[in-house]
Image 1 (spheres, rainbow, N blue to C red):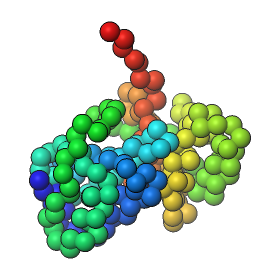
Image 2 (cartoon, rainbow, N blue to C red; image 1 turned 120 degrees about the horizontal axis):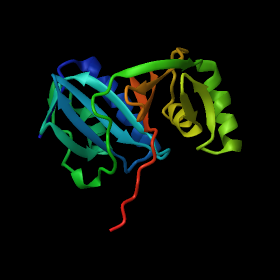
Image 3 (tube, helix red, strand yellow; image 1 turned 180 degrees about the vertical axis):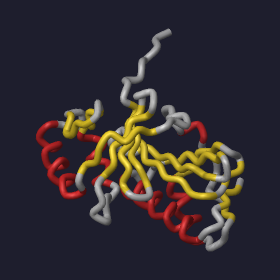
Image 4 (cartoon, one colour; image 1 turned 90 degrees about the vertical axis):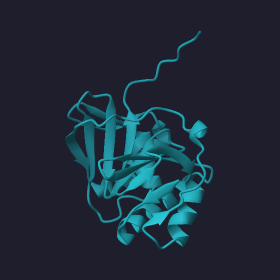
Length: 190
């Protein structure tokens, strides 16, 4: 198994995101997917939202789940364009991912408001709507996850976007994003 990310800066950006994921959940898993000379990284969080980022590169096999701590160790120690991301743990991935939707930007949360929103979330709960615009009702858990990841770092606003079909919400915070399914998952009882 190989993760190939030619640029050292891109590998460092991936390591930064994975490091933040591991700080939130040391037992987290990361799903790596290749498409069109880009590798996408997906990870769950304790806030029931996904973290995602991309970099030019590829992973072989093209869709694999690894331990976040193993990937972080490889990205931190191996200074080469190709590395072993860790052993596959595909059976540990739970949940679906958005396809390749077009994202419609519906607004932006000013960076200075993120902390205040998180403080209100303590009183209102993680599922309370803490921000609205353009048909998007952002639950506290999404903004808490942004803050939990240590974003935004540069004072830039957090961009809020909806997938073209409205099924997913995305909060972009610099080089990574928080993504959440907007429609409740249905449980099928057999």
